Length: 322
Image (tube, rainbow, N blue to C red; front, side, top):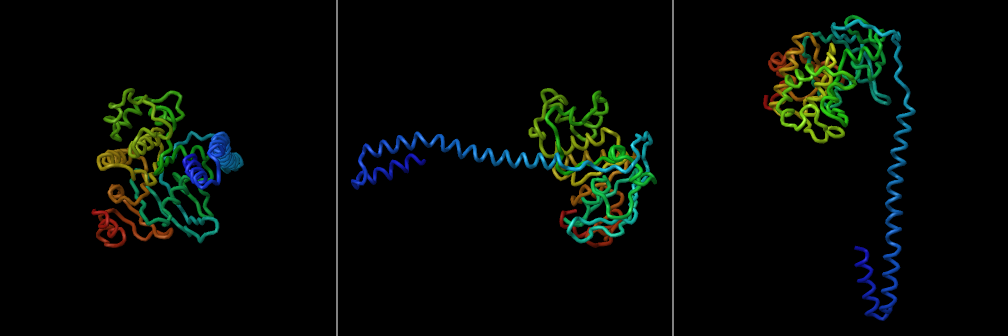
């Protein structure tokens, strides 16, 4: 390290009579004496920078405006179980060209609808718009024939659940993460969901089963296990609609079969399912598929119909070996 460099350089100076041996030892001792405080100052400087960045981010979050909810504050007990309909929707990101212009489509309840498209086609944005995480520039979204603005946000998001690609899991056990926020979890329902999603063999191998701690962000779990737990969490609340946004990207073929079987079962029981992604093996389970291109529907139909059309969707399937 640095001490070796100092000794080597000092030895050269001593051999050339540019420094005495005693001066070299004195200089080396002083260097060792000061090196620890200097290292601490450098370390503190790095910690200070990290703390300042974290503080700035914290204040940014604290200064965020709360979501405006135009709906009446009265909590509605009405269960919205009908179609999810988009009429004349327009949306653009700030500083960019419009992504959706007068977009309309009806997602039918009790059916699996797939949304495919290249990056930037608008498929994930459409999911956020359906969840009312983004506000459209124009047009309306209806659930069971009722305009979105008339339904309180908390009710809307209880009726429409989304499973993102990167699931946020919390420190605690698996039960806490599935029955999130439920003070009296329905253990029978949790067990049913875990069975439907193929989590039972994994849970039975754990020392404490469903009560096993998983660490922050589920560090002790694989990506596929995290995604299935996130899906179980969404399904646990019995939403009318489930949106999967690239939520099967980390699944192996066996786990994917369990998930697809569960999605078919839930849709047959009346749940509307929307699968957003580019993995054709998952999208093929959908009874109706939309292919988005720059915010427009370029192709739509069943998996078989789109293959027969021999367009972009068929080309993608060939690329993925389907």
